[in-house]
Image 1 (cartoon, helix red, strand yellow):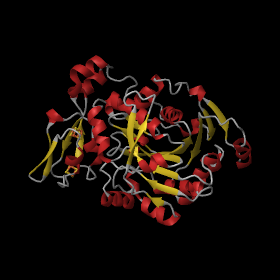
Image 2 (cartoon, rainbow, N blue to C red; image 1 turned 180 degrees about the horizontal axis):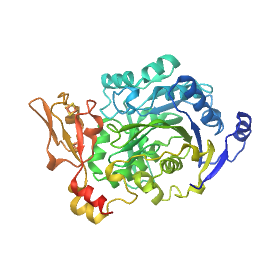
Image 3 (cartoon, rainbow, N blue to C red; image 1 turned 60 degrees about the vertical axis):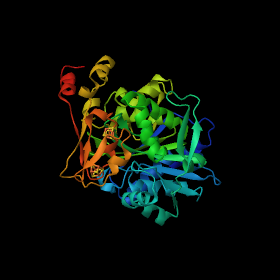
Length: 405
Ligand code: SF4
Ligand code: SF4
């Protein structure tokens, strides 16, 4: 790994740097943290902030702050699907050193209806964080159109009004793999700024992985977060973002530049940045250099936190994507296919509600996918809280990987 590494600072030296006018936007703080013990997370999050100049360098006493966690669905923290509530709590505590006007929330995958939102907040632990800290939980589901001049897929994007109208948006991603776009971290977490069913409409419109990954970059720009702090204490590898395997990665990474953060994360797990498709397009679009030496890491030496044998989803395991000519010709034969297990499906109907192509119907009390209509967006796999949707890996993809395509 080659990057500029600045040794861990004392809080005093961090404070003197805070007064420096030249805050390096490519600076990423990296702090070791191996458990969700409240005291340890508090210390790690405080250090991650202080290494970058403290919360005062991000928010002002008059700022209205929205803290956007990953609250994909009503999942409990130990499942490793959502941002751990201890991380959210520690960030709220830091921000509240400067301003008490703090709202926390997300636009979950299963929609924005109030009872569903309440269940998501309760199961993910965000409700308790709000009750303990005095932060407000967001139930405002109004939306706003945001213009993105540099947008590649869209020049105008619908995002949550509460996030858009906050003075400072802080994003708290969970570090996970993602079947469609490789990785969900700093860039992808902002897709949660897109409300309810609009998410699925975008999936339908940008219905191949690369168009969608490019859209993620547009959304990240539209949401304009000022700060990102990634919960990579426990991360998810393999079949993320829902049914992967938990892995102790043991760190927190924070900073202002989502592209620099995602780039560093890819280096830490020893994978080529192309495997994070949104990052690939951000670099292709000149939003980040793609040069490790342009990242200034402060805090822990990255060499001490590198993760070996991190498993990406099968389709993203190698550095180069499947060549475009193969994808065009054999798209369905080269992508995983969602399958419902009738024995596990409860018939809740959530997947029917959100499928952007109306490819799912209820038959005899269970969901059934019409394969010919399916665009392989994996929204059903992502939102089924009962793990009833699995992904069947096609033989042709395995063969293509085996022969090095
Ligand atoms: S597959 Fe999952 S989301 Fe769809 S109806 Fe069955 S349990 Fe509900
Ligand atoms: S069936 Fe699942 S993967 Fe296919 S289009 Fe519908 S939500 Fe997407």
